[in-house]
Image (tube, rainbow, N blue to C red; front, side):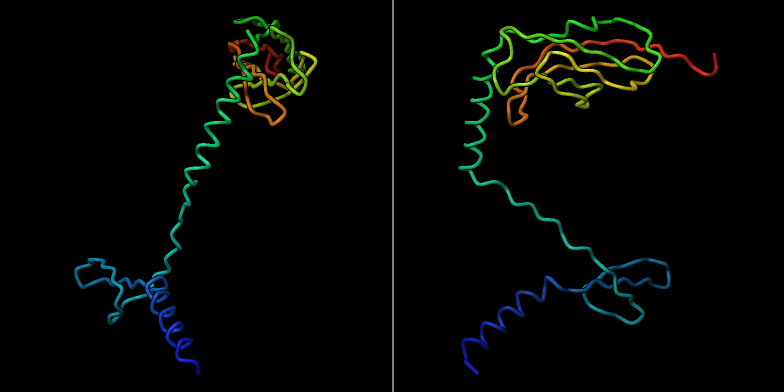
Length: 174
């Protein structure tokens, strides 16, 4: 056997040993629980889940993220505004089936590859290039709708003011 191979195998075994160490749990006569890495009389082996590790991004990748952020800010500055034209803020309306129709506009108009994105109570519910989105079966009550312009990668580049509205729906109880 090659001596280098034997040394390498021994080192690998020593390094892997602590990673695969077992934990033992024992309870004394007074009911005190102790944990140890050494077995003792009456101790039981405890299964320990592997430790979660996180690899941090490399500094050059963080710099790339900063460049992308600057690019998004530049792209978003093309738009003076984005806003809902319907529903109006604090509007209340009846919708038997729960459908809510949103209309929006931007100044200037959308660029090629950009879309309007509507969020309802913080969750994305639709995207459109036409300036209108219909959301089906919205529950009765007060909701908040957000409006964003997203680029072709789905990154939000401009946001408008949210609107609150209330949907009234018929109930089987009344």
